[in-house]
Structures are given as structure tokens and as C-alpha cells.
Image 1: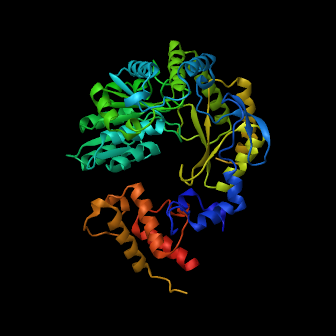
Image 2 (image 1 turned 135 degrees about the vertical axis):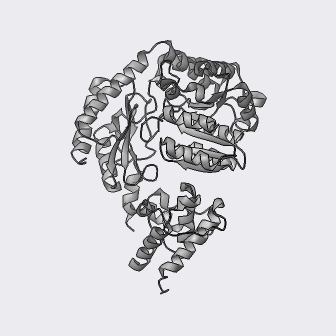
Image 3 (image 1 turned 30 degrees about the vertical axis):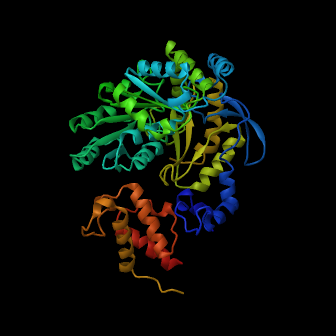
Length: 417
Length: 86
């Protein structure tokens, strides 16, 4: 078996006679030395906090090493901010580790009420619902609103959690070409008379480009289609007050429901949606991910409350982040790497169609102390395999330059644009 | 060894799986040279159509080699190529 010809996309369909036995060829593929070498790059345990410099137990060579961290959602450093850690520690002493109940019955604490109120105020909305996971908030909210016979219209680059929401609701799923207002209009035209919801993102997570809400929102308005915007990678980062891409592009009044995660810039874990009091109340009643899940852990909620305060008291962290993004981009552009259409802190370095090259480079880069992870098909198109670099506010100029020296040696020298 | 199917037979297998997996297609005539999307198949449906067709044909073609395929005709050609090479 030529291991590099196959990917995770090839074993989803199963011919195994039993559902609790994976397909036989999956086992054969995993046993291939080449596959094992690739898989060794995933789920490598970090041995320290997700700061700019961290420590990792490398699975590909069994070595523990210090690394410069270019693969983290800790965009503003809030996961490791002393005030956030202090607030979470205090809440741990007060409330214990878990909420020990679903939100409706016994899992809502005063910190949950405060965070939901403050997130709603931050986003300029009437109400907010908190979920224990970001993925749960997306599929939960969509499943809570959409019904069989409805149509979920998605940008083709939308996250799996949005796709799953439509599937779970048994709504019809329709995709339109990325950021293309004409394609969106054609889809909406074809589904006139149906209840529809249009879902797009602020920052697309694998490409780091921005949703073109300025051009898509008027198409939705013209067709009477409500707009749902996933601001997972943009909340606290973009717009004058940090509300996200809808604020940056001046279309907040055309967004019906706004979604955010607590696991990216907020530095915790969980997700939330903000909208009118009426629809938030309705979603909470019918979203299984809300109604039937234990509420978020109180220490995490208290930490996220503090993170919101720290991130919105001034622009210091955001200024540091964008200064670092500018320095990183200038370095990478000078190497003539293919960075796609990135316009955010998420910067892909697109390698091309060779999985073998991608994984070989990944091992070399990590062996030299730069934690940069590969992204393979089917997460990205097969001819656009890539590294997905995240810039954080915590990186120093020296760390950025040192990491870029490794990227130049190991990536730029081997990948001609 | 089983004889290799001809292209028309492969097209019939794919068309049957389109009918079984795409609710909008109904009884409409399927033109193998038009894109599967034109019959209302979204990207998730296409994954299912390809999976079911490969299962019926007892072949496994790497997905990365099918990424550019848009029509029934192109898919049938890829399947045929794979069967002939086997």
C-alpha cells in the first residue's frame, strides 16, 4: 500500500461487518510506517502552558524539547494571563471544579449569569446563551432554530460545527462558493418560499481570510434571509470595540445571530451565541447541546469574565497582536511563500499537493524547535496542503525572527512558489 | 477474475446512487456530462455518492485523485481507469 496516496477521507465509508470494528484496510493503512510517521505529529503532549515558548513531548522522535509556539488559539495570551488565572483560581476555591448540573436545573451559577449578561452587552445584543463547547454552541444553536424542511445556506468554507448543525436539525444543507454574493443570491433564489438561514464566518479558520460580509449581508437582506455569523477567530480581535468582523465591516445591524467561542482569544473553553431575547430563550429550550449538557465549568466561566475585562479595558493586547502579525507577515512575504488570502492572525503557508513533503518538513521544523503543525486533506484541498500558523500577542520580536529563520531554511528553501 | 465492467454499466451504478442520495433529483433525466451539483447534490452528497458507488463496484480509489471530478462521466472514467489498472 502506498500510504501517501490515502488520507482520512478514504476510510469514512466502512465495509466492516460490525460497527464496533473499523474497516480492515484502515488498520492496514495505520500500520504502514509512513502513516505512523505522519500520525506521530498529532496529539503530541504539551508539557507546559500554551505561552509563546512552551515545551513538548515530540512523538516523532521521543524527545522532550522547548519550542516557539506558532500553533495556538491563545491569540491574546489570556489563557495564561495572571489576572485570568487568578480569577479562575478564586472561582475554583469558591465553586469547585464542575457545575454539577445542566443549566436549566442546577448548573447556572452567578458567574454564568454575569458572563452571559456581559457578553450580550459586549456584542450589543439583548441576550446570550453559554454552551460548554464552541462546537456545541454552533451545532446546538443551529439545531435549536432550524427544522426539517428548512434550508441552511453555508459558505463552502464553513466549519464542521455549522455543517453538523444543519445535519442534526435535518434541514437541507446547501453550500455557495466562498464569499461569492452572486452564488449566494442564486441559492437563495432557488429556495424562495422556504425558511432559510445563511451561515458565514468572520475569519475562516484554515485560510485566515475574512468573510466578505459587506457584500453578502445585502444579498441576505434583499431575500429576507437572516444571517448567522461565526466570529470564533475574530471576537475580541477585530472591530473598534473587538466585536468582530461584522463590526469591522459595519454590518452588525444586518446580523441576526452572532456566535463566538471562549476557547480562542478568550483563552478558556466553551461557546456562546447572542441575539434577541426571544430567539435566545427559544434556542435554550430546544438546543440539545444546551439543555442536556452539564453547564460550563465555573472556574473557566470566571476566567473568561476576567478575560473579557482585560481584553476590552484598552487596546494594548490587540496592538501587540497586530504588530506581531505585521512582523511575521513581512518576514514570510520576503520569502515569497504562498500565504493564500490571509488577512488575520491565522496565516497558512501553502505547500501544494505532496503529503510526503508536508510531513517531512513538519518533522524538520519541529525538530529545530518551532511548533508549527501540518494540515492535510480533507481538512484543506488536496492541492493546497499547508502549515497553519497562528500569531499571538505573546511572541517577542526575537521569537518571531528565530522561527522565521527555521521556516526559511526548512520551508522556503524547499517550496518554490 | 471478474470481467471489467464497461463504462455504461459504471455510469448506471453512479446514477442509481445519485437517485438514492439526493432528494431533489426526483425522476429527472440525469445527463452524465452535467455536474452532480446541477442535480442538487451538495459536497456531502457527493461524498456519499462516491462511497456507495465504490462499494457497489468493489473498488477503492483515493479521494485525493477524485477531488477535481464534477460530473458522472468524469467519475466513471476515473473508476474505469482504476479497474483497468488493477
